Every structure is written in structure tokens, then in C-alpha cells.
Image (cartoon, rainbow, N blue to C red):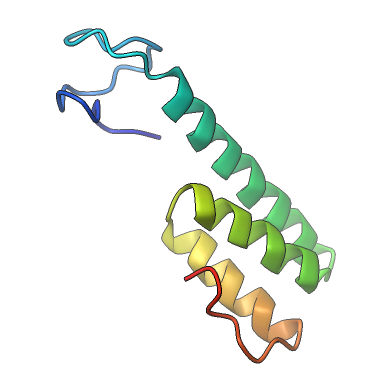
Length: 90
């Protein structure tokens, strides 16, 4: 989740509108939530040994929001899926 408003750097308080500058944060919140959903789906696919799907879902998560967990899952699932080039999303 966001820590600060990207427009004014005020601390993020979980609201859809920034309390300081009144920026609409809904689009950013939606992207963050979608990235988290993709990462959760990637974890589930990985647990089911579907490494190809896990790699693709982790890539989608990375396209929306960079995270160490998504990067690690992408690399590891890619290796287990037999992909030789796994840097497409990195």
C-alpha cells in the first residue's frame, strides 16, 4: 500500500482522497490492489506447482507495482518452469 500521497507527500491515511491536497487516490489504490491480487494468485499457482502460471501472474504484479516478493517469485517460478530467459518483467 502507499505510504504517502504521491502529489504532496502527506502520510497516507487509507482514504480515497488525500486529506491535505485533496488528490483523488482511487486509481492508485486500485492499481495497488490489483498488483496484490495478481501476487496472491501467483502464490496460489506456485503452491499448486503451476510454475508457468505463477511466473505470468508474478510478471503482471510486477508490471503494476514493483516488490521484492513478486520479483523473487517471478524468478524462481520461471526457473522451475524451465524458462531460460526470465528477465522480461525485470
